[in-house]
Amino acid sequence: MKNILITGGAGFVGSWLSIALKEKYPSYAVYVLDNLKRRGSELNLPRLKEAGVIFFHGDIRVPEDLLQLPPVDVIIEASAEPSVLAGITSAPDYLFNTNLVGAVNCLNLAVRHKADFIFLSTSRIYPINQIENIHTTETDTRFDISPVQSLAGVGPEGLTEDFPLDGYRSLYGCTKLSAEHFIQEYRQFYQIRTVINRCGLLSGPWQMGKADQGVVGLWVARHFRKQPLSYIGFGGSGKQTRDVLHIADLFHCIDYQLHHMEQMDGKCLNVGGGRASSTSLLELTALCREITGNKVPIQQVPETRPADIKTFITDSSRIRELIGWQPMITTAQLITDILNWLRTNEKILKDIL
Image (cartoon, rainbow, N blue to C red; front, top):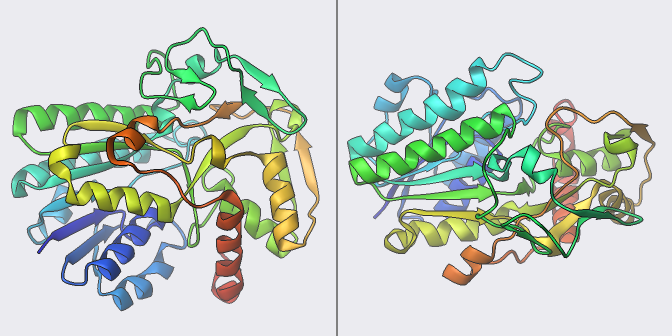
């Protein structure tokens, strides 16, 4: 029997993982901890309770809140301030204390219980100044990665774990990379088993999407409600491109890791949708129009926001070769899943999304 703690467990990723784990493994004790800061996370509490997940209201920034928890075998660290603009357009204190100090507090808890530690990091640990040196081509609908590159760790399939790390990456990316370094130190000196997942753009039902985080959910919601959108930056072209990973595909990855920690111990892996699931905002708009049947006005804002990038596609070859994992859900199916969720929960979501 496993006792699992998921931090940030009332958030989008944490609630998905906890509910899916409890449904697949009813005998497991699944605990979640969340401070309920993000608006909409409170809507997940009834879902967690119905699934048999045990909720604790607490904050990873406060060590005493972690000490209230029962002993656990595994910690899945899914809590974060996830906005790439955090600390740039606002004070950095909450970002730093949550993403770095909070992660260290969770590592201390793992040492206390001799628990395995699965960390959800981000593709944003890769530096902006290095990404800007990637050779790109401009098509009618996207900025794409050129076949020929002068940088290591990048090719037509995207960025690998060998991409250069020297440079700046946003304060958000900096806190997550710093947490990665602490995880590697704790693994070495405290003998806990760890795995780091550098996740690409995640999306799916129950994500309360905003312009600075969760853009796919926001795009579908605005089309569903016939509300305006904006192409921000890069001349207002809408050609900036990302790969997208359905949260259900992430669950299958974490599920494997949870049960094969001897194999996964010490690994640092890209986990993203890859080229097959990549989309620009222009292409995303076309898909949303087709699937929702609605067309919305879109404003063009030429000025590029701080820390924004033209293109990012995750090359997840390493984890595919290691465990055979690869994304199975298409972008079109992802949009359909979000749309169905919006329709089913329209009343409770209208003031949040």
